[in-house]
Length: 369
Image 1: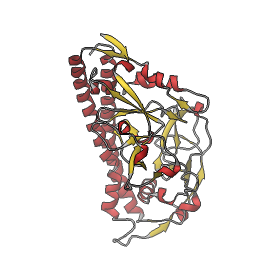
Image 2: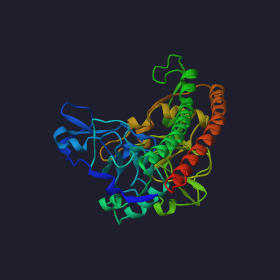
Image 3: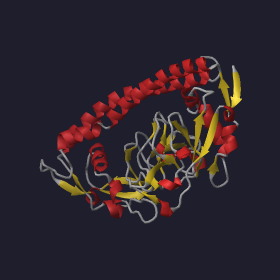
Image 4: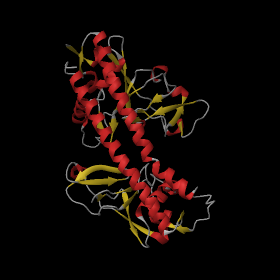
């Protein structure tokens, strides 16, 4: 099987540059949505949390086409640089200056090339190339000089078909897991109704009467590379460390960033960084119930917005939540624990499918599939 530089089978496009005067945060006539690094996910391109840029700033070639591979090319976080997702259809949207697009030519099957950008080998190589002193960047040559194994086109299509089937199974199991992750909210509404309307007349309590919050402890990125204990930041686990500063079953609330207000419960001892808040109970409340009520309260809406989004105790303490009886809280917990057992089974199946897809991708680009 031959191998060629990416530049021989695809073109690389730069993202849209724009200033503050050129952008709005909602759909507006004369403006075009623009994707950023946060819109690039393992599940594909996410068309949420977009910015909208004056249409005259977006060239036609910068509109996303079916088969385009959108890459996060610059970020303060090395874990973000190199993230890639492929567009399934033409989209009337551009992509920002901190992103790049690889547009496959007729010399390569687009899906075959798309799978290359999902391999762990690609991500590892990009992380190594992008590392910089202050901000991590992928240069044009980093991408153009990628060596792509290139069997005949018919063989590319066959390989892409095999990988597509494995990826479809992975996505199916991920969707099942997503539904199970939403089950807590469904059970809450079934038992207690809408928290704002409170049609069932359940007792209420202000958050500040039930708990207090304190900031976690700072931890350098270098100290989040390994260890036994998960490290929680603004939106859940983002690393591992060899020490912990909270026990299991601690409620954690994202403190800063776009996901501030996100609620998590530690399933083992963990380290909570200063990007998150640690919850300490002031009254006897079932932690499983409380975490669910806090999630449904959507604490992000109370964040300060002067610089970057920020949640603090003073902002969330006045918020009211429902406080059913202890027996009802215990029943809620029992139902959630039952669902959690089912979720564990699906998580295992999902992880197995991800491992299978990764193995098939590695074999495919070694000429072994």
